[in-house]
Structures are given as C-alpha cells and as structure tokens.
Image (cartoon, rainbow, N blue to C red; front, side):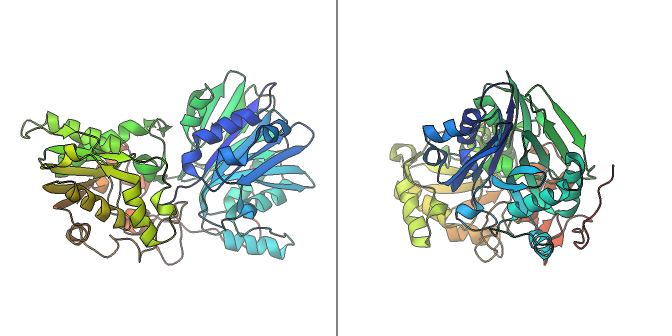
Length: 481
C-alpha cells in the first residue's frame, strides 16, 4: 500500500509562514514522498514552490526566503489519482478574476471525471489529470458568484468522495473536511497564530497545542491576521466514514486522530488480538515499525492472562533504515529482494523458539512469506502470524493506492489458504468488531470498504454500505444560506 497525502495550512500574526510550513511537511513526510510544495501570500501576491521528491530535496534555503507572507499552505504527495509528475504536484495554484487560489488535497474524488467534463464544456482548461485541479477550478468558478463560505458549500455539493483540504484564497487560509470525515484534519493553536494539518504531530512540531479535529462537513476559516478562526458546519452528516487504516497503519503513532492517540489504539488492537486468537509461544516480535505497538499490547495482554504461560516481547527483526520501502520497488523480484535487505533477524532471539510475529496487515502476501521464511532460516521452531486488522479483500477508492483485487491475497482465499501460502504454522486476523471497539466507534461510522467490499460512497460497480448517491452533475447546484 502507498500512503495518502499530507496537508497543512498556517496563518500567523507577523512572521513568514514558509519555515513553519516546511517543518510541518517534514512531520507529515510519512504520508507522501513523491512531491512537496508550499504556497504563501504576502497580502499582495501569491508565491509558490512545488517540486518532486522528499521535503529535504524539494526545498533549499533560498526557496524558503522567496516564499514571503504570513499565510500559506503546504502538501506532501503520494499519488492516488493523477500521474506521477510535476503537473500533479501540490499545492495546486490558479489565478482568476476574483484573486488567487491555492489548494492542497488529501483523499480521492469518485466523480472527478464528471465534474471535470462539465467544467471543460464551460471553457475550463486543465493542465493535469488529477482530481485536485477539478476541485480548484470548481471552487474558483463558484467564487466568481458567491462569497467564500457559500462558494465552498456549492463545491461540496458537487464533489463526491474523500477529501481533507487546506485552501488559500488570497491571504485567507481555510480547511475543509468531507461530510463523511474520511480523511483526518485537525486545528491547532500556536503562540502567534493557528494551524490546520492532517495530523496533530505537525502541530507538535511547531510547539503548538491541538485544539480539536475539524468536524466532518465543517469549514474552518483562519483569520488573516493570525488572531483567531471562524467555523461553519456546511453539511450535517447522518453517519461518518472515518478511515480505520489511519489508526492501523498510516498515521504517526504520536498523532491524535478523532480524540484517540494512535499509539494507544494500536496497543488496544494488539490486546484484542490476544483475546481473539492468542497462542502460547516463547517470543512475540513485531514487524517494524508499525507492528511494534500491536505486539506490545498483545504481549502485555498475554502476560496478564492467568491461563497463559507468559511470553517474552522482543525486537527480533532489525530494520535497515537506508533501504527504500518495499512497495516502491517496481517489480515483484525487487520487492522480494528488498525484504531481505530491509529486515534481518536476530538469531539468538529466534533460534530454537516458537515465535509469534505481529504485523498490521497482509496485502499481496509476498512480504509475509519472506518474513516467515527468514525466521525459519534463523532457526525458529514454529512461526505464528497475527494481524492487527481484518483481511483486505477489496481495493480502496478513497485515497489509498492499494493493490487491485487480483493482487490482494485475501480477495479470493480463505485464512487457511493464506496461512499455507505464507508458510506459517498458524494465522489469525483481528475482527471488524474489535477494530470498531478499539476506535470507540460504531461500524456505521467507519469506512470499511477494503475489508468488507461495501463502501460509504457511490462507486460505480461496487456495493454501498449506506443509502448514498453521487450528485447529478449538470447545472451547478445552488448553495443554501
């Protein structure tokens, strides 16, 4: 799986926003490694610097010095819609009769083609094949006829899908979260201003204080002088569709999302994994890094269980942090080779012992097969695999560039079949009910499409888990007061 994207926006009282945005993008680097960009406004004009690559490669000292202004937005991207090139890098900027507009998007629209085709018929020229430009053009068109709040509401009535946005209209920074709240977005207070970000870890990096999550369907407008913000609940959702994979894998463990510390949620998922499918073994070890909190919770629950023999928690796999992520490797052979470059077992921890290996997910199954074999090669007597999420049986359309059904090992195989394919002595996944319990949410308020095959949005050819239809795109819908 590829990560999604990270967005940020700041409005400060009397200092340039470029460096705080730059630090924030570093804090969100795990959410996207293909491109990074910042757009600022100095009260007179917009300044932009967007480049391919990691944050540290995309910016030099002079680039930050040229980004004048106390307001700005930033973005790190891993493409989930659109090409992997500079034309789709963000923030996306556009100038029009009513001023300048910059937009950063985390998520994925279901009806981008429909909205884009209508805008093209109305004379809009597009420079990319990404859905972010569609949102920017639609909002710019609405700003010609409406004030800022009504223009945003009109655009929200026309786009369908997953989005958290940071937007800059001239020197005003705003944040928007889609009515289902699928992608995270939060607001924080700094000593001299306010910040919007995909994760609270970015706020921590700026020595700020998390105020709260932006609510699903809410618009937050930061004051241009950095002294406050206004909020508008533009859509009142009946149910939300929070992405449970933010807690399982994508978010930093030190982030707080929907009032839950990600690290503690992962530990709770690990504890639930023991309750559901715990097995006595000599040692419990995580697949680094995201499996660590799961394994910690699992081992703690095992050692508290009076009916169990107790278990040792150990770091039995050492990670080489100078090897690229395995899913970036373009061929299957390279992915398999990268596993052995990336992870090395500690033989003294493994040899002659029964091992429980804890991971967050199994996608294709190739990496799991390699890891199990690594442990056997290191002398493990038994290898039991436990997964802190349900089986992934369907692709994600909401902003995670996940494998197709044909590539997903659980799409058409039973747990027993997968166990045999990865070569483990036993395999168990966590149930959907336990995931909902750990997140303190009803299943009706989660997006579970990748583990159920039913989605909270109207996606062509896919089943829905609720009564929802994409908007009819013809004449632009009018926004209510």
